[in-house]
Structures are given as structure tokens and as C-alpha cells.
Length: 135
Image 1 (cartoon, rainbow, N blue to C red):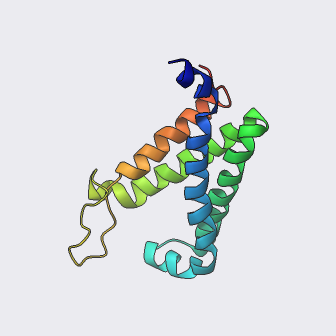
Image 2: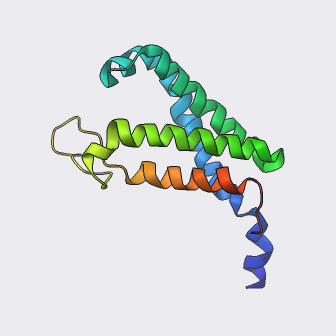
Image 3: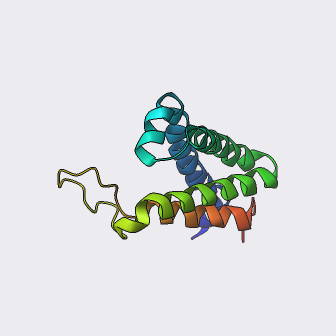
């Protein structure tokens, strides 16, 4: 237990890095395909650019918050919660819980909301908890 207690203050980095890499992968890759995504999702293209910017900025802020200000962590958490709630209710909710639902059936159906819900809950933790690592 001593070893686990010693590394406990640094464990948040695993979650931060995972969130950051997820959004820093998906955010910037939306910029060059914004028109296609907008058409596919039936959204104005400016919303896709806004989404891409939010995901990219959130990814940067969650990393910066680990060594910088508490507000950076909380703002990143807020951004991710909003993005994931949008993804859940605009795309994934209609497909149920299972993220793999519909895959491999020759359809374009997006999966269920389990992955997005997990990210939203983790983001909500950072939003409400900020940089406190020992609570």
C-alpha cells in the first residue's frame, strides 16, 4: 500500500494523458474534413469547426491544468462534458448503450453511447474536482 500511496498524486496524469490524446487526435483531424462531416451530420460547417477547436483547446487545457492553473483543468472538463453530451444526444443515444451496436452489419450506424458517457463522467470529475489530486 505504501507504493500505491506514493504514486497516487501522479495517477491523474494517466487520465489526463488519455483524455488529451483522445481529443488532440479527434479535434485537429476534423478541420480538413469539416465540409464532409457537416454534410454527414446535417450540421452547419461552422459548428464542425467550433467542435474541432473545442476538442483541440480542451486537449491542450487538460494537459496544462496538470502543471498550471486549476481553471484550465475545470474549463477542459466543461468543454469535454459539453462535447460529449452533444455526441450522446445528437448521435449515439439512439443506438443504445453498446458502443459496438450495429458495427459489422454492413451499415453506417454509429455505435451506442458507452464510450461517450465514460468520457463525459471523467470530464465531469475534472470539472468539479479541478487539480485536487489527494481528495
